[in-house]
Length: 596
Image 1 (cartoon, one colour):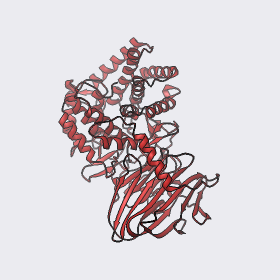
Image 2: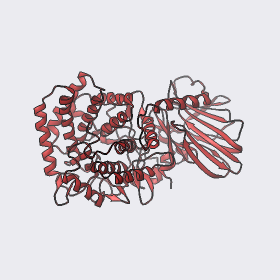
Image 3: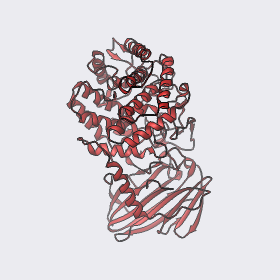
Image 4: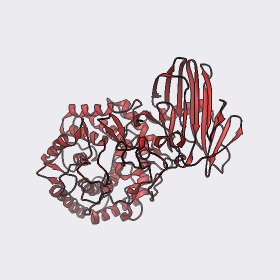
């Protein structure tokens, strides 16, 4: 059984690859995050595409790390013959896209093995291979072309490439794989050592702008680097994860494509970037957001492509057996057709955060927000699919109504705090109506808690955002009892489930792990309650879940002690950064961290 946490991320801020602990690149989509995978062994077998570089002798010990302040992965193999380090990275793009691997011997002489199998279209297409010169192989399939350059003697075998060589202390061996559209000339050769230096300097310059100075600087900075790596530089869009169909249940059907941009992440994204000092990235995400939702408010989607694409049709790659047999493997995400009321609040809150940080949109941007508010006033009392995108029919989800309230509240604050014009009294009336409705129908006196949906008896950890966004103070008795009931009924082995899949109907078989963002929300609630020691303890337990290179998935299985869901997960890393900021501030039980 493979483990998600055995992978590490490299990328060039336009796409990303996953490298396994044994030196195999098992996932890469080229040229964009959402392109077809050309290495798809992550969801299948080596025949579906991978690139292995590893000692051919026995490995006694393998360790890995990122170079400080950079997205450069170093995997060190200790063998009886010596010690070798494999350096993997993708230079931030200039014109083309390259993947560089440098094999460097630290001690002795180590025999190495290369197995290179490239398959476009998620492992389906067998490409044509040819050799333009002695150190260059070109792989072509339709519109795609990749060129592998190395001085190591290699041979073609079954539409792939293999090599056996020995690496010595005085001679590192570089391998460079470059992508180009197949109709273009071959890319120019890349000097691997120069690219390594430039990539390291680029990342160090970028992270030097981080303003966080709290107790958890290393995990915060690694999370920020990870978020930056999942940012599509040309547009500013930030994907939820660079993978598809890593299961939320072992062997199950809860497998989704996360290589897109979710509006539900908007507030967390802007708050994270601004608090950490990355104003340019916050502005780029804000601009992406405005472009994505531009148009008729009734057509706003919960999810968009990385350039703001609307149509994300979902289909199944039936030839892939899935991660540890978890099928189906899905490409695209049908959630783009859903109605999710909460996204209006996410968008308005994100834009208000940016405005309060003096990153103000144009006058046209405010007109767009007012149009969104007009539409919100018409649909706020309709059922929706909710933040968790259930596929079992619409309900009046409490979280959705709370975020609708947030949308109206932030519009009012834009007029009161920023001098913008709007029908304030009308908005105040609407805000009061939504608030009263949630308090009356969303709180179950018998359970003593805000519940998942109006008329439901089931809990949902998304109600933990109520004090975080300022809907109610955490000192409100209803919120105090909600936290207590969630502690009693939704915590498994110290971590929070988003809801009980065995009781609620979400359209899928029951069973999933603890949702990491929900545990971060609970830590924030503890902080707001003044339970600072418990907040720190929970936060630091969450930090121990990170894998050996500091990455988090979407979920965690406490019983199997393994990650679940797509990886690495932006929302988990956003929550880590925002919670670290909250816990690093002076104790203030009244301050809602997502209410600017």
